[in-house]
Length: 124
Image (cartoon, rainbow, N blue to C red; front, side):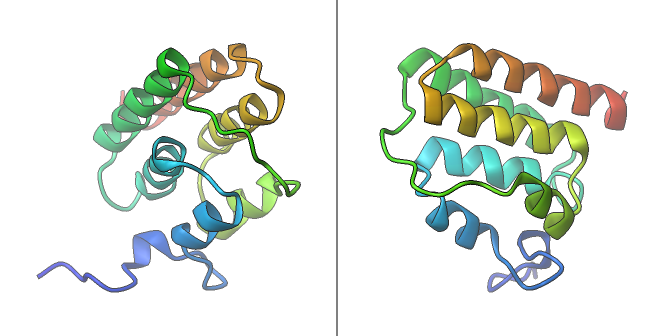
């Protein structure tokens, strides 16, 4: 039976959970799912998780679901180190957050490209 409480694929090296990141950054449902899938793909869903991240990124882009509030400077290097995600996954998250901060939707297009690169590097 799959563990239901604190699955290790969602817990970083220092005990940070994906929920902590989503809550601290005040991400909405769609943004939180992008972070979740990019963080866990190596330990759970692989290519399918990266493809799910693309679905949510495209939804954010087409539905303009980026929120208005973003209060804290995001430490992307910490995220990459804490969850041992690849550079492409980290850059996709960074682009999504930059789009949220600036309202520049072109960052979502760039995030999509980073996820595609991660798929190509890891699974093709």
